[in-house]
Image (cartoon, rainbow, N blue to C red; front, side, top):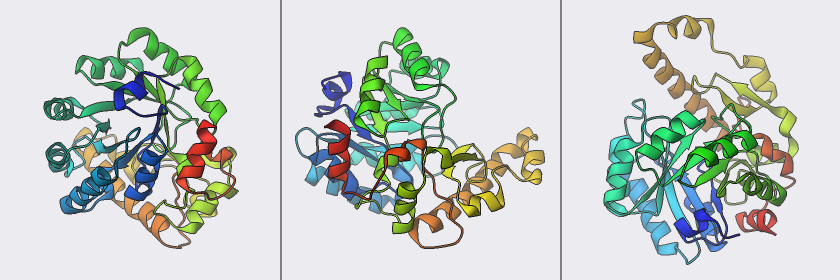
Length: 315
């Protein structure tokens, strides 16, 4: 399974264990590295810079040949922690950074100065060409089968379009729950895949058993889009609570979002409220079950160790 991604990160298999808010942790990434793939954690999973530094030190100490680790940065203005998180990552070191939801220019420049590779989330050719011009090391093609904040283009169309027009590697994100899915994405021309939702129901994941079991019990048809978390459409499991509160923004938010000067603040408030709700649901039992996941949970049949999930993906 040698591809441009395996060469770029010196890993055995062309797979990145995708960064998932609240879910990803060092235990998951360590097991990922031991199994020959790369693992990534959202920097926002750490409340303080000291916690982020501690995680980096733990991963550096546990790193093995054939594995790699990185962190995800939200690089838009709504993330007030971004610049300090970037500084810590560059000072302490990691193999790669994945950027989301904003311009990656500052991240690319600073990371490259210290030898860290930068992969950028993109949802179409326009943004992919922008990050290539900024000298990103790879584009992560977020398609319409991804979990969380997904794109609008099918995996096949997006991969083929990017591969036709880009010279940097293309990593497909979304729609991978088994080995056949990986082979399909590589067949379309992808240089690797980013896999998230199948790892929610892992022994090592830092969420409740209820959340993990939901990924076993629910399927692809139970995934819906909601605007009630971050203000941007996001995929969640259609639990009774989600059905009760609905998936559309409130009428007040809809009105305020039409005001250019207020739109940013409305999104920041919605993001804060939504993140607190998802954190409560992920970390403790509650009737307010807002669980983020993608349709690839269709292949999740039991709660397994990360190592066993990777074995299913590659064997």
